[in-house]
Length: 388
Image 1 (cartoon, rainbow, N blue to C red):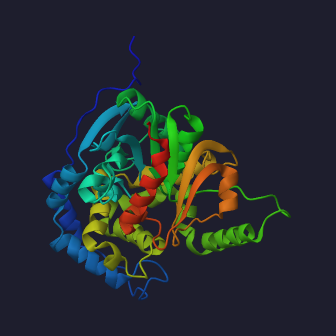
Image 2 (image 1 turned 90 degrees about the vertical axis):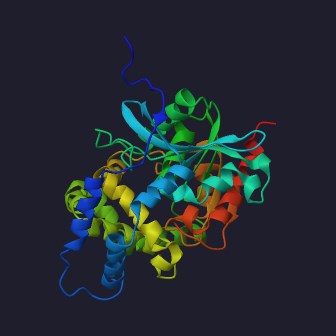
Image 3 (image 1 turned 180 degrees about the vertical axis):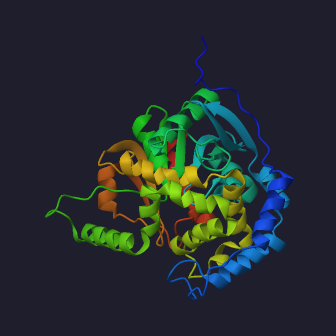
């Protein structure tokens, strides 16, 4: 009897939503019930005036059909059944003498759309002033429960489970017996899970958000004490979203799944707080990019399953946050406005660190904030792992 969880064959997937969904969205955006007397600015959450302008743009100017065409052209999609889940992924074939297979892994509250600026640079370096020998065969999944990938039934499904799914995608479906992975945020957690659970297939991982293992109390160098103190302050001042999503994600989801404005506010406030944008998130990313990312959450209805990962990781921590050693060669690009920045000494206890770059600017959404810098570091790091 055939194994129902055995991978199937990939099929083309068209990112296209029904007209009825777009009509419903416009109607909801036209009848927003705004909160009474919000405080100006971002100190207490999303700024009302900035959000009103984004909502107006979403309702009156934003062309989702244009974004569908753009995604189809630059991040052509496929879908496949893996471990009982319908997995959506983009595949961009490299142009070079020997492209290296590379998983690009997004975070939260992002999506595979985060990779739209770096995909062409990595897959076809010669077309962008680089060396064709640096080409990558890119696989850019929507993580399970995100975007157009199916949500798992298991409420404790998290980064390590996603690592198993993506191992099967890369090895059993696409035939990449040896590959690399790059990610930030929970994409970095998945990359770490791949390295920890499937080191026979993972040549190396490159992270733009690293975790670390601190030295025991009484033996910590000053930089590690500063890191732990900064993390405690950040959790107290900025970690409210995480407390909610790791304890009561479903209650939150009822509101965000029903209100596009609530969803947009929840997501955009994080893009502002976590990026190197000097307080102006629209100027940094552009309203079109912010709305496209939010639209992927709205159109797919994935907000509940995406925030559920926080609760899963609280109850069943993945390898990325457990005090376990990861022996697969690891490179880190340390962006100055990233929310988690353990010092190199702590990262070296966690990973077999062979590459460390201090980046001059950029934050949590590195692939969109500083695509050229991220691409240059990824190319440099993976050169040593390409077959001769």
